[in-house]
Length: 151
Image 1 (tube, rainbow, N blue to C red):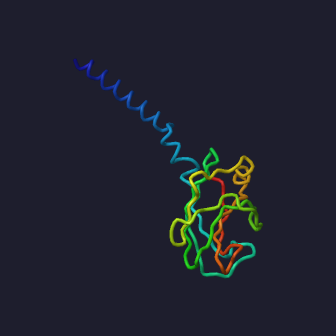
Image 2: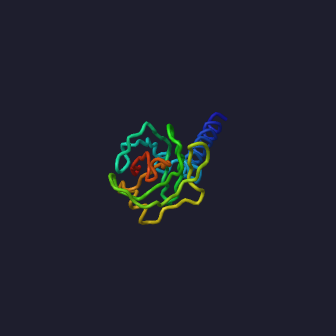
Image 3: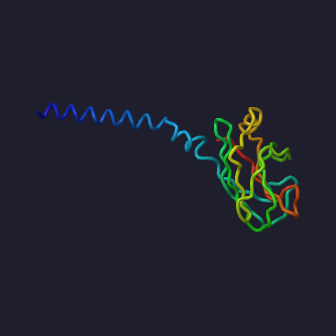
């Protein structure tokens, strides 16, 4: 009886381990683990091109998933934000808007649910050539900025 109990316990333990291993590679883990839960960004006027002398700052999280979908949430402080975007552009270079962010609260912006990069934009991200910035009436070209780094 003791041998049967030990074998049953071992079989249950192995089955649980197999289930847990399967969960580690299942669809739910895929959602949260792409590129390390995203990148925390800190936006400043010094990162804008040209640099902006401002006390405004911003912070948030941007995740570029392997399937090229984009999840972003940015909060600006010390300014009246009018718009926010993800742009294609190397550090020190301005570039075109590729993902317009949606105002979701006071000086808060999120990515639209269907935001997705093209293959070329994803390659630009992998090369460190995307940035996020927040615009204001006083600084229409952008008041605060952070470069995105591939995770």
